[in-house]
Length: 78
Image (tube, rainbow, N blue to C red; front, side, top):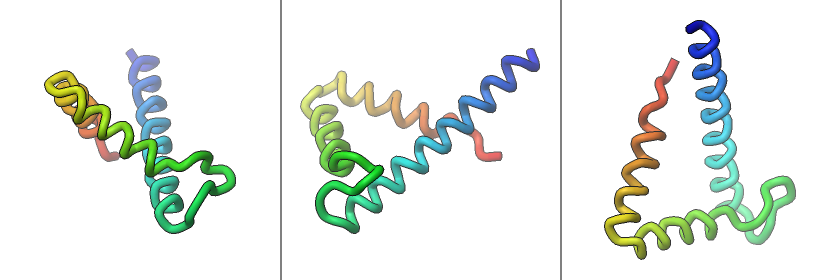
């Protein structure tokens, strides 16, 4: 059981780092025009495309959005 808890904490920490990197990429993408080195392509347009795809999906998009929000809110702050 200790191994499972350690794996959950490790995955949670990686998720936190990933979310922070996404937030950083969004801020950098909004502050500087064009492609930014080490960030990649236009992150903001990729996120708006994802939101548009979810909106075009109707009820399936709504369910996918609910699952994404649940997963992001499920993580505990320690």
